[in-house]
Figure (cartoon, rainbow, N blue to C red):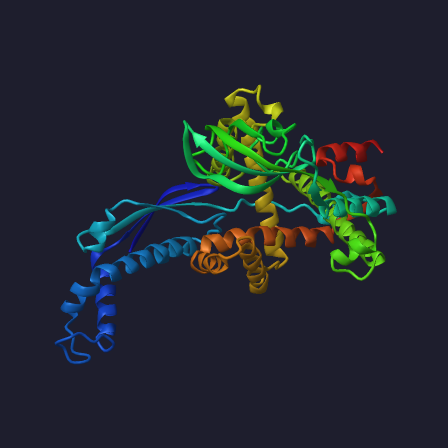
Length: 453
């Protein structure tokens, strides 16, 4: 094995690594020798299969595994021999042709680039002062919540043959959707129930059915959103032949004992208690979100150090890919629509730098304070992901079982939250009472309110 350092910058190392054909072949021969006593092939006695025969049968697939292991082991050796602290996984680029290496015709040659953790001094958490916005659940909040629950439990009754559909009414309809006059898959339904104003159908569909009566036939013309999940329909113009079969009016449920019973509770008082508890949890999550944002802002302004360029570039590419999708779909924020591409790139690169800087700071706080993500926490996260896909749970479990990168994506936010919780216990916090409305405002708007008070 030959490891040559080709780039040595403060936060970046690059290497050219060569593993000779003879070394790879020796590992292959050793493995094949170990297989002899385990493999049973027709025409050979147990343990007597020639290595040459095993090489012909299994050599190529086994050499593929050996090459992967050689890349991992030699990369790790390059890092460990120099006592480097990688800030992210190394970037591997093959130089030799993989097929030639696997067939034993070439040495394994590849380059490895690794971004390094910068040296920086962590801010002292006890020197950070934060304001935590808190709001109490009022009786009025509870009553509003109960009214929303009652609205969700409303039923519908026939409105009459001559009654015209209005906002909030439910229609029973049959429809057939067509692209260029041809029905498309998934565009037909019978006895579909549609509440006008619910926003559950394609934008513009419900509005064109206002004023409809039972027995009416309508031609509804709509354009599918650019971000519609079905790619063959996204952005397409379509006609729907709609027949209105019935118009129904909503019958609101009363906030009473029967509502509590319908929701599986013994009494209205218990329903009120449950609503209050749920609201308290919602308020608590909002409070924590604002506190976390304030903490991250404080950590960002408290640290200034050079960032690994590779990490910043990778983060920026991920952000910019989403920006390009938003531009294409017309979903760019209003304040960004008038900016040039250069202006947008500069702004989002600053966001990428902030994310990288905070990621490194939180990682260092976690490392120095032995913050760990347990296997039980990961298991619970996987289960939570699987529950989002009813009927496909086993497939989701398999994805995480066989994909370390997917597990790493779950671990990262858990680790971040645990470090944030640790730091919240170290910083100085003063509670500030705010209204429910203010608590759920945009963090920047709420921050302005807290500063002014």
